[in-house]
Length: 167
Image 1 (tube, rainbow, N blue to C red):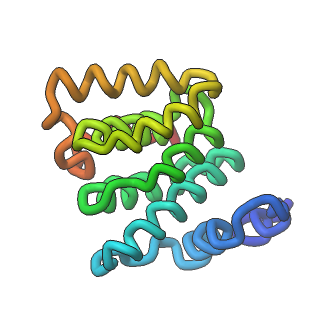
Image 2 (cartoon, rainbow, N blue to C red):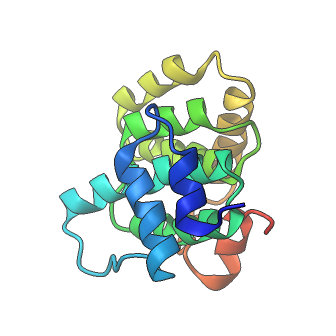
């Protein structure tokens, strides 16, 4: 039985994102995640997309420890730049109802909607047929309207635990 990078590389399929696979292999080989401290806003947006896709891939391949590391980085990045609408839609399509990534993406969508952009409502059209999506978005809306500061500093040690998966 192969382990580590060999096992993951053997399980790689053409439909999986090659950049997400490279990020996962980076972690397997180096034992750490790339530094995200000095990303430009544009690079932040691109890296958020990569983290989201990699998180979904790790979910598919049962890699919870790496999912948590990816989520920790994503929680830091979203404090600076909102998640793109396409990435929110993609996360809903690639994850099961109740996943921590969906919870985060529902919150990101509500932040965007409540900050004023009507075009953000377009995402609802894209996710309305996905099991559980509307309930998760409604839950996020309720949480936001009860206390919109609830999502401040989600990367902090106490709050980030709500987004971690069981290892």
